[in-house]
Image (cartoon, rainbow, N blue to C red):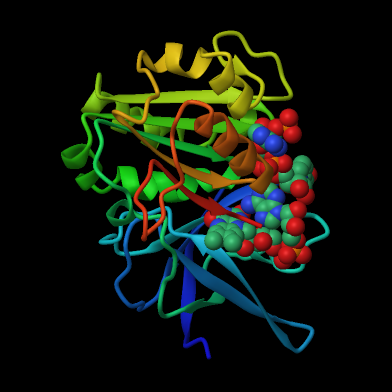
Amino acid sequence: MTDWVNGTVEAMTRWSDKLCSIKVKADLAPYTAGQFGKLSLIIDGERVSRAYSFVNAPDAEYHEFYIIKIPEGRLSPRLLDLQPGESVQISREASGFMTLNEVPDGRDLWMMATGTAIGPFLSILSDRQVFERFDNVVLVHGVREKQDLTYQSLIQTVKSEWFPRFSYIPVVSREDCPEILQGRIPALLINGLLEASAGLVISPLCTQTMLCGNPAMVKDTLTALQQKGLKKNLRREPGHITMENYW
Ligand SMILES: Cc1cc2nc3c(=O)[nH]c(=O)nc-3n(C[C@H](O)[C@H](O)[C@H](O)COP(=O)(O)OP(=O)(O)OC[C@H]3O[C@@H](n4cnc5c(N)ncnc54)[C@H](O)[C@@H]3O)c2cc1C
Ligand SMILES: NC(=O)c1ccc[n+]([C@@H]2O[C@H](COP(=O)([O-])OP(=O)(O)OC[C@H]3O[C@@H](n4cnc5c(N)ncnc54)[C@H](OP(=O)(O)O)[C@@H]3O)[C@@H](O)[C@H]2O)c1
């Protein structure tokens, strides 16, 4: 049984009509960057709950979630309709294994996300541990349109603090934008453009990767990385690819 905690919406950032971030105040059990909690609302007399990754650093005073509206979805449209001061329930305990402590050592860490799955990587980036563990950190964010490239100010802050050890590579699939890579992450791995952008070679000798988001991206990226000699990271057999599907 989930232990539900009442949370209060403190602030909302509406990035567009489909994307928003919610900051919630709630007394939760400690969690690790990269983990997710469950948000829930009572809809038509029934509790509806879904998983959402924490975007904030685990020691922040609030809990932040980055959410896309699935127009036909049950919960996400209601979450986007919330207003500051309103309530949302959160699971007291967080879950998930897409955390740095699950990732073996390496020289370079590549974090690759689609859509709102950039959230857990922003949490990991706000925790200094990632730069203590890895010489180079690359964040690849694949989205449909340029307007979906959110959190630019936070990313700029990480860039200015950690240049040249941190690279941010945005990828847009449905718009032609000058100076932004176009297409999908797996194709850009296969044609070498991601490695060229980061100035780093992907190899089992030096690379660790974390993949999160659209399950088709995770699957195709896994295949592309396996072609470069990387292996799935399993607890019983450490490898180079740690993954989480959003659906
Ligand atoms: C571990 C985990 C962490 C997650 N973290 C987040 C998060 O931080 N932010 C977030 O927006 N969602 C996240 N999700 C997805 C979220 O749990 C819900 O599935 C989503 O909000 C849709 O809920 P719904 O009730 O509106 O739609 P449903 O009726 O449940 O519709 C689900 C369908 O919507 C699509 N979909 C679901 N999530 C996404 C997404 N993020 N991007 C694009 N298409 C999607 C898929 O086609 C899926 O089959 C996460 C899921 C998992 C498993
Ligand atoms: N409310 C609204 O107005 C509105 C508008 C649009 C979408 N939506 C909802 O939002 C959802 C989409 O959200 P989203 O755009 O964040 O997520 P998404 O559909 O997962 O797309 C994010 C990125 O992942 C890419 N992708 C898809 N399959 C891939 C694969 N096999 N390999 C690599 N990359 C892949 C997409 O490329 P491609 O572009 O090539 O697929 C896109 O660049 C839709 O399901 C819809 O329900 C709502």
